[in-house]
Image (cartoon, rainbow, N blue to C red; front, side, top):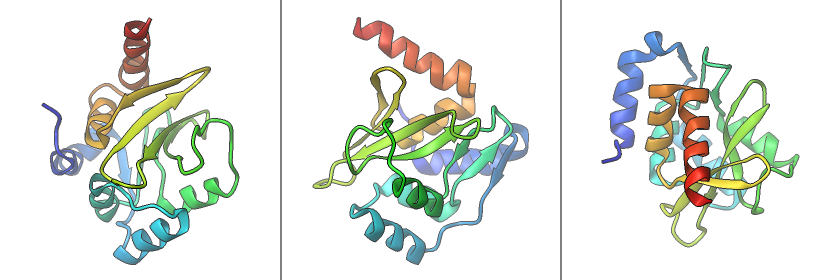
Length: 157
């Protein structure tokens, strides 16, 4: 069973020093609303709860970060080839944008979303933000997120 976003927040609070995580200040409800208005789509409940707890974080693990909302807006204004759909946006990155993880939110149902990573091809990792964070927190970028991608890619062949 996947952890809830509450489970992940509790874990981060308890283990942030051990995990080498530096939390950013929480995003206010106004900042979240401004972000949603700026991108023209409502965030999934899990992301709202997370960003209300912390407007992203950085870690010592390969300089991995969950990107703050204002930086996401800045990035959207400079589109790139990694996002598949127009409303997709990068919410996590590592090694100063050497790689990104992107979310695609259904505009009709904000809690219907998927998280993907694109190198040569798009691999959907999950439809659970808490599962994405759990994978990073448990195994890091290489043994966690990249191995996850490789395993999914292998299964799709």
